[in-house]
Length: 339
Image 1 (cartoon, one colour):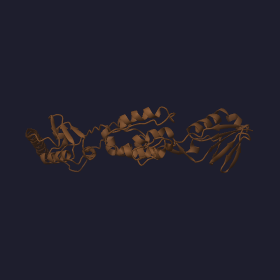
Image 2 (cartoon, rainbow, N blue to C red):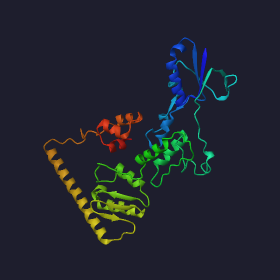
Image 3 (spheres, rainbow, N blue to C red):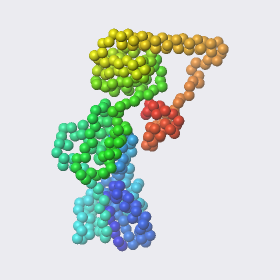
Image 4 (cartoon, rainbow, N blue to C red):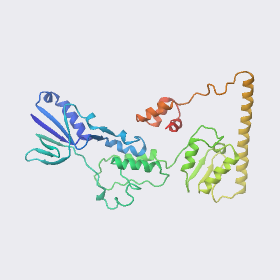
């Protein structure tokens, strides 16, 4: 019997094992050839997926970890053991658990990063502000760092050639450009009658000194003059510049223009007045509906715009936010609020 031994059950080793067993199935079934795969652990890391972990395309390590034997062919024998050495003269592989004879040996052991080869990488900032994404640990730590990233300069450095995957560095740059919030756009359909709005609160929590907040109009920020003044005061005290596009107003820590302040107060008062008129008309409408016997408070109500269970199920299956919105016929922001 001819013995084929493959060392390594990563992506390449798994693909080779499946191709061998597919093409040599008759010989294997007739015991003319045997295929054995050796790896030191049972868990397969889908390494192309590590690139997507930092950006939340894959959300957790469970998305890139699977048992190796799920992907290996049934015709092959799978041995979990550390490989000690290969003796080409005697055609033997020495394992921690014993030895293997071979007639044909396939080396698919892959490669591992050694950041100590590049001076300075393993200093105090390693995996704090300096990361790799070619390892599971590095990709997960970079994911956490990017979640709290509030803007600035992101540098990708190819430390030395050859790189493990030549296309990964430009892919990373393009994913960062699409996913990292260098510029963050907030869009919501909730009323400006109060500040208890997820998009608004997320926006306010991210702003820091030196940031600029562009707002479509005053009434989209709030419909109460007091609330408007409080929010603007808090933001400019932090060093945030606030710009209202429709009204062409700008507020900064150093801007003390009395006319700008007057115009802001007038427009804010108008927004509050419009809100009060709307509430008064709403009350009148409710009273008329009650008198006609057509008002049933607390019954029925508006149907939810999105099925939260379906959103979470699709996301757990790895479907992107945009695809979920398309499938369920809702807005992207509705999906993001559920997640």
